[in-house]
Image (cartoon, rainbow, N blue to C red):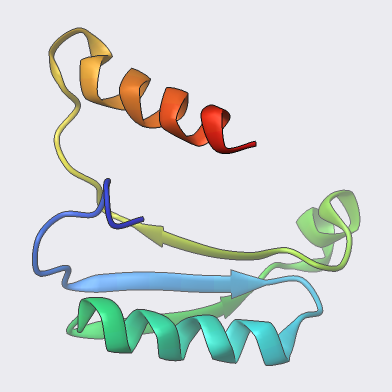
Length: 84
C-alpha cells in the first residue's frame, strides 16, 4: 500500500466479509500510517460475499498515476513475488 497510495490520501474504503475484528484493526493501522481525511468502513454485500467467502479484509484507495510502460508496477509485482 505504501508503494502505491497517493500522497496525503483523502479517502480510504475498508471492507470485509465476516472479519470484523481484523477490519477494525486494519482501519486503525491505516489511520496511524496514512492519516487519511476519512476512512469509509463498508461490508461486502451477500451477493458478492457468497462468492468471496469469509475472511476477506481489503482497503480501496486512489493510487499513484500509472507509470509509463507499467515500469513501476512491474517492479512492485516482481518485488512481491520475490518475497513469496
